[in-house]
Image 1 (spheres, rainbow, N blue to C red):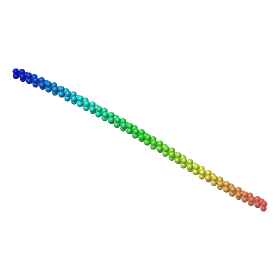
Image 2 (image 1 turned 90 degrees about the horizontal axis):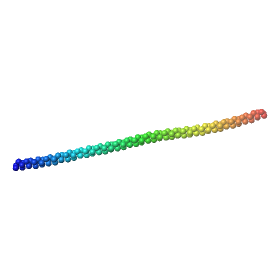
Image 3 (image 1 turned 180 degrees about the vertical axis):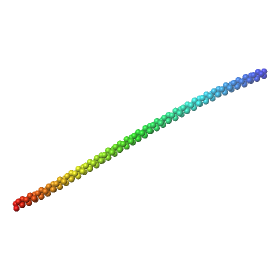
Image 4 (image 1 turned 135 degrees about the vertical axis):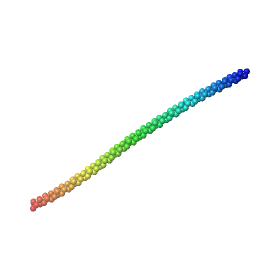
Length: 147
């Protein structure tokens, strides 16, 4: 009877140990599954973070490229404006010079005309003087002939 009781207790203890071992194995499997799921979630989170980081980096690069393009356009416009202003200044200077030359030419022409008029006046005075002297000489000659 004692042996049967011991065998029964041994069987109960063994059944209890097997039951505990099964529970421990289930807990271990659940822990491994939880760790695997947590690791997958961490990998997924890291992948998403990397995708977001790469996307932000790409967006920053696109913005940087746009900004560089705008700066290049602005510099081109500034160069074109500077060239246009330089051209306009040169044209204005040429116009001013042509205007000065026209004024100088007009003044020179007026001076020449005035000089020509003065010369013509002097010529007319000299001719009148010569005619007067000639008339005087002719009168003297006629008087001499009469005498």
